[in-house]
Image (cartoon, rainbow, N blue to C red; front, side, top):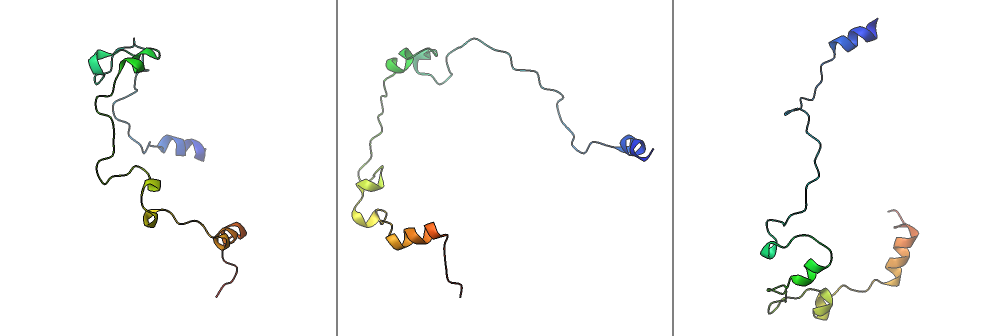
Length: 95
């Protein structure tokens, strides 16, 4: 009898707003609002038709990779002792 009384007193703690949402309906493909010249989605032709008028090039003093920087800004190679410490699970001595 107690479980039935407990269920009758139950009040949902989460209040959902707006009711159930309708299932999405498939729609025909159309051009994206930001597509250049209203290009429609298709196979590989649409990518070939688009030409980037503003290619990305590094400005003066900018670099895209650390390997392009001078040696002082590159990552230092990992020492053999550090590799052994990591592979062994960390510190072996507790002070």
